[in-house]
Structure formats: structure tokens, C-alpha cells
Image (cartoon, rainbow, N blue to C red):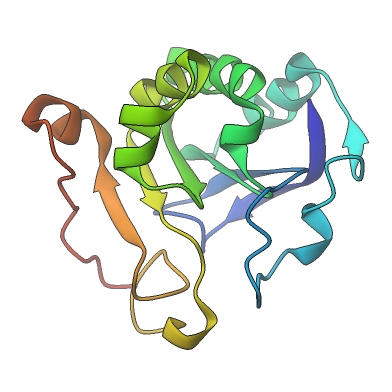
Length: 166
């Protein structure tokens, strides 16, 4: 698994104390991205899923895993394995993606769809600099949605979570 960075106790990548796994490599290249050094797929460092999971599970205060990047859906197999480990230990799993829920559901690869189905929440859509905001929880630009993935898969359409105050 190619990693840009790991962050224990993040409070900006979802609710509670989160273990944020920033993967390396992103095909979107959004202007104004807060992690532009994560775009090059050859950058970062190589780690096994087990090494990342050891850090994830090493903190008893962790409430959940957040997959960010880079683009987690560019490494769907490894991110899926990590998400399953997190769920197996009672943690919730969020992911950020420059692709939309609909794209991943309808046009994603089998591995991307499997990762989507393992998520509790997806924050979707590219970062758009002209729509950036600090007013909305958990997202960087107004076009992005905070999607309840299980409810969306049951409903057959994206179901957004109600805004949460920070």
C-alpha cells in the first residue's frame, strides 16, 4: 500500500478521534488541493496493510478510520482490506473521494464497488477551489456531499447525512 501519511487522533476527518490514512496517488489533481504532494502515484512510502492496521489499532481512543489522500479508490484492494480490519474491531469507516457515489457505484471497478460497500460514510466529489468553505463540516468545498453509504445502497440513490455541527 502506498502511503502519503498517517495521522492519529485527527478531529477534522470525521467525528471523534480518527485514524486518518492518507494514501499516495491521485488522478484528479484538483487545483487548491490541501495535499498536492499526494498526487504522484510514485511518491510516498510503501507499507503493508498489516503495518498500517497495527498503527490503527494501537490507540484505544480511536473511534474510526478515515481513508483520504491522494485517492483511496485508486488503491481499492488495500483500502478494502484496511476497512475490513477496522470494521472487525468495531470502528466506523469514512472515505474521501474525488469521484462521486454514483460514479463509483455504476462505473467503478469491482474492487472500487467492494470498497464503497464497506464504507459507512463517503465524502464525494472533487475539491473545487471556487466553492471552498469552512462553514460545512467534513468537506472542503460546497459541491462535496457527506453520504450515508449503507442507506444510499438500500435506497438506490445518494442519501446525505444531516449536517453535523463542529
